[in-house]
Length: 349
Figure 1 (cartoon, helix red, strand yellow):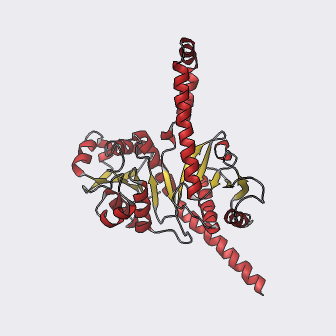
Figure 2 (cartoon, helix red, strand yellow):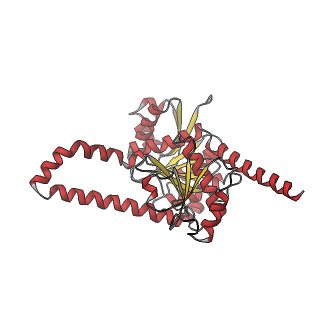
Figure 3 (tube, helix red, strand yellow):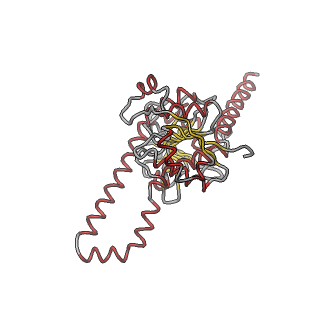
């Protein structure tokens, strides 16, 4: 991009803020040339950390506030009382054109509520969706919605599919992403009226995406499609189940290693392979759930993440901004609606 790319950071959001935020920005500055930051939070604490990273200080502006939205604050409270919070000020910077995106590790519900109130939704998008990248046997898959919308219409799911396809194409670099609707079976007769209606809409040949059809839960990690779409209730349950399974597997593995001397010796022999597995499944590689459909880029980093994880979340905001994610979503939906209108006019003649 010809002009500097500025990302606003909620410097006070998250369990390890502001240290993890500032250290993550230091890492992201090296990864992404020409990147600038607007750091929102306690100027004294941020300034002390910037003194350790003068290279970041040279490309950062600090906007002072001492108000912080806590992890236990309800979204309604954040909307009423958080007008001078670091989270809201960072979002307003995106709304006002001072930054192209915002990253926060703060309260997820509050960020969702504030982002919708401050940024609004894109033209043609009824509801924003929360999307993330999950590791699979084939590589990576975009999974949405992860909890922003508990109840969805067929139109919502259709819009999620379009946004997920654009995200996979612009951020993951998939040339023609395949999209699947999460269902209780792959047969065309399975599922409720909502997923059936959404499937009918996604079968439209005028769409630039490749609709795979229905997929079951095991397809998420199998990597059968590049984008898996579902409602926020189902998506959140599926994600939390997968996270719990991973923790259980890790605990069982540690117990098995400690079980006997032979097990410990076996671990020493297998340590290189286990280290590679740990690196592949390192959650910091996938940190950053993205709110798709807002009139501005907003990324939610995990509340307990460290600097590496936060840098990854910043990377998502950078990629989406550079690739013009929002413009592409609006263009695809506008073209589809225009084609529909033209076809209706032709049929009426």
